Amino acid sequence: MREKLNKIIPQLKPTANAPVLRLDGRGREIDEQGNVVNVTKPSNLATLKVNINKQKKEAFEILKPVLDFDPESNPHFDPRIGIDKTKLLWPKRTGIEFVAEGKKVVEGCGNHEAEEYIRRSFCERALPQGKRFLHDPNTMETIVSLYMIIDLLHPHARGRVKDNANEYHLTGCAVIRDGVSVVVVEGGSKSIKEYGKVMLKRIGWNDFSKEKEEIEDSDNDDNPVNKCVLAWQGSVAKPSFSEFSVHDCITEAAARKVFTDAGVPHYWDHAVSIVQDEAV
Image 1: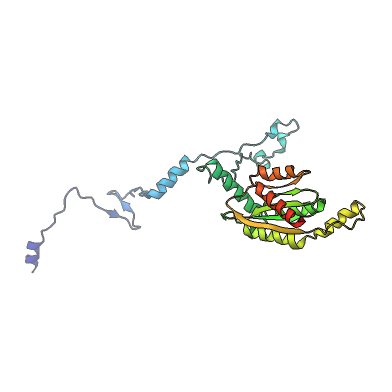
Image 2: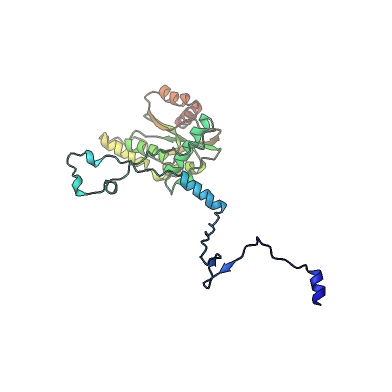
């Protein structure tokens, strides 16, 4: 059997240049003279991520804080105190640039679209939480209500008309004349509905008329009872007024001019026709 294995497996002859590993009793490598051989330990190879982090760390520049002022420039500063100025002073703050809300969004839009976006954003922020449901900037329908009031000369009465229109974010106008006044408001359906409740139910118009009579010291009982009526309500394609304004007009021509300038003179003509019909 041994002879067969020797034929199959060739015998390896030791070569003269083959290195010989010699170890001492403590397992250290020694040379032929018995001296310990100093073998350098292989360094750990850094991975790719470590190399990248190392490069970033080397490229990162540490900036020292720039102080607002140097305490040594103060004539009363005593360096013998041994105070570290870098620990006492705050570093100089860098400038902060504020970007207006909606600016990045509207850069690619035209002037009209940008102004409309900013206006809607401002209106949504300005609305109180309880009245936010009344304002719908995405609605395409504009409702117009035309009210007729017998006496709107009292400052408290006209103040209630204007303040409520602004509160419900309605546009329009109030044209005040001695004898009859016309109030036009335009806006969303919810706001128009709430404003109608104020004009027709919540405001005591006759009380304002009595206060006016008391101020003028008038005992004439022939004055008609002050009241407010809804003369007309409908929908239009777009609003005709940009805000709500109040106008005191002496003549009928001046009152009609307010509506003519807004492109809706038929509002005034309709109110006048109702007054003439009631007079007949």
